[in-house]
Length: 252
Image 1 (cartoon, rainbow, N blue to C red):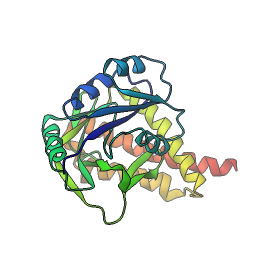
Image 2 (cartoon, rainbow, N blue to C red):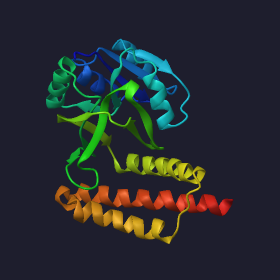
Image 3 (cartoon, rainbow, N blue to C red):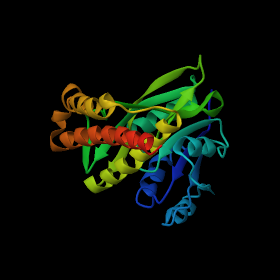
Image 4 (cartoon, rainbow, N blue to C red):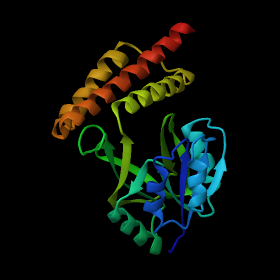
């Protein structure tokens, strides 16, 4: 079955990343849909330059915003991307093939993360498999904010595609620290709302285990200095999430 494909992106102040993303999808996108959270930079201007279907809505959570963005797609099949991502040449060719002959409800592939200019091929960041192409009538975004994931309905079929989704994550350690602080707050609040608590194992043992898993078991040491940094940062994010959750319960 031949299909048309909508590329769907949510944004907030992404002027540094958007053009790279748009250029990478131009050969496979039948339309590009952007749902913006009222950016104050040149995001809207760049979208107009590339003839993008541009919409705006107040941000009320990653899961909520991504599900909302799907409603603006003109096609059933979508490729969901973040603004700081781009398609590798091999992944572009894989997507071209499934557009000509689509046999499955969803398609997933590896995401390769670039950290401060270095590609991270180990640590808990790799392999980073993402389900990013699907029939929007066959599922919805779920998970727990800010770590959303698309959940296909039962009995849906999916297939692995060759090629990589290139993720330009952070240009500096400062950027990473800012995001860890932001995302750990969101994650702690999400767990608090669900009635989850944090104990000694969560904020002491879990961060230590996460570092060991990322640096030693997942061979982060093979990525050199930045493999160590990523492993430490990942451990730190686990610690912050649970210690903030503990503080929320103490306030109550």
